[in-house]
Amino acid sequence: MPRPEVILRGKPGEKYLLLGNEAVARGIIEAGVGVMTTYPGTPSSEIADTVSAVAMEAGIYMEYSTNEKVALEVAAGAAVSEVRSAVCMKHVGLNVASDPFMTLAYVGVRAGMVIITADDPNCWSSQNEQDNRYYAMLSGLPCLEPSTPQEAKDMFLKAMELSERLEVPCILRLVTRVSHTRGPVLFGPREEPPAKGRFKRDVARFVMVPAYARVRHKVLLEKMRAAREIAESDRSLNYVARGGARLGIITSGVSFNYVMEALDILGLDVGVLKLGMVYPFPRKLVAEFASQYDDILAVEELEPYLELNVKAALQEAGLKVPVHGKMGAELLPRYGELSTRLVVEALCRLTGRKAPLDFSSIDEKAKKGLEMAPPRPPILCPGCPHRASMYVIRRVVGHKLVCTTDIGCYALGIHPPLEIGDFLICMGASVGGACGISRALGERVIAILGDSTFFHASIPALIDAVYNKHPITVVVLDNLTTAMTGGQPHPGTGVMGTGEPGVRVLIEEVARGCGVQHVYVVDPYNVKEAVKAFKEAVSVEGPSVVVFRQACRLMAVREARRKGIELPKYQVDQEACTGCGVCVKAFGCPAFLVGPDGKVSIDKELCTGCGVCVQVCPYNAIRQVGGGE
Image (spheres, rainbow, N blue to C red):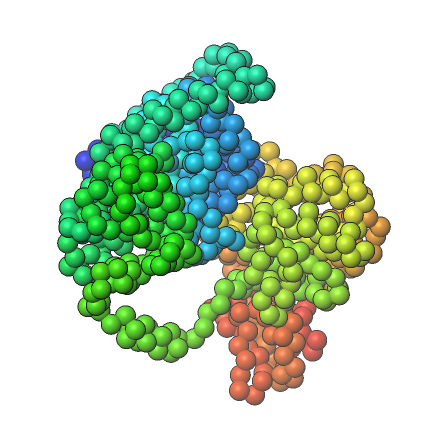
């Protein structure tokens, strides 16, 4: 993987092997973006992380914003002040940002602004599979969709150009297999970000009271017409990738790669229209292409966006060419990721051909290989403070109370032996959901969330709990970082996205400022004190907040190694161990090994020295045998 400084200092004409996300970061640098904002979310995180590492040297103001709504607003503020900006987020992040997003389409921008959304087909790291191409239709903003890392960089630059040409933000839609695919990327020249922007007052344009909003909606519709003309005519974005007979394929984004591989496998003479600009939809171009074929197959992931638009375009043109895809015969699935196999099978069903590969045999061999490998479910890391916190919660309330959970590493607490987490839908919903559940059940509910999530979307719900006297206990698992997406800073860390020190905002002070009367801050590694505080928190009247504060163990281990500090080492006294299994059945650290006699030992390679197991063992069989405090 190239170092971030290579992405900054690489010269025009040089070629590097980059992730799609790194390629977008290079595009941001080449475009002369002055302000870059984000709320981290997989599969988009590496874009901002790469820019953050070089932001100071590149002259870019880079910000890990409180949430995606704020990130979009900050980027919009820069763009209306004649400074190019970019904002990136995962697909569900655009839901959070949708309020300013929709009206920003009316307002427009004075310098280029690109909104990068990374969709996650197959829910590799997400709670849904939504297709954000529909946000382009909903807002009226142009949407570009790359297939490769090279296109990811080039299309970012194209989106910036279109944004300034049309004076509206542009959407760059990535998916996991583009964001996290590595490919060769040819570097181009860099523009320098401006030293300073300029804001020209224009109340009728930038203040969206109803009288002005009605006018700006008409302006947006005119811009959409101009964008459609670009989609119809710009052959660098929408073009015929290959000619053929009888059957034509219309595709876009990562699906184009599967199509080309499938055609190579089958040796079919098929025409392919590749759409890089998927909104506005190039209806005339599509109708012209389709008129040459007996059948059309729309190949795309998730929703039948292309298929529906192709059918509308052909109907408008008076063409009766059959269009196949996800509807009707359902040649392709409407969920999950596509694959070369799925496209091959769809083409075989459509053309009557037989696949030259025995996919069933391949699957059977793969299945046998997987059966040989031990199962590896996702788990909390050895020494993770969240495990200690949930052990405390389970020890105090068991399963007697409902525990809502949230988006973060701690969602893994649903697995045995902790089994903590009964309700999860989106960032911050643990607190709001707990309020509703407690009101419906007439009993206390525990809401569990992380430190970054607290700042992101939980404070309004906490105020609601105070105002409406909801009997909930809000547990904030503060590991001093945004751990799930790679350890990015947030307001509680006191570090800015540029690496400069910022103001540290303490969760407990915010909670007290919201009116919470009962606030506790404890170290989850001190089980006795944590149990005492949590028992008190669940016994008070009204809402309470418990902050379990202990650094992410991965970060702590890295820091100790960097400083040459030896971590504590622990060992099970085999004579004292009774084989009761409490440490495994109640706590479940992955560093525990169970022998054939039922006695437990500790894998010294996995143990990170947190010391909680010493407090968990009822027979005092676990002892420190070396290392530091």
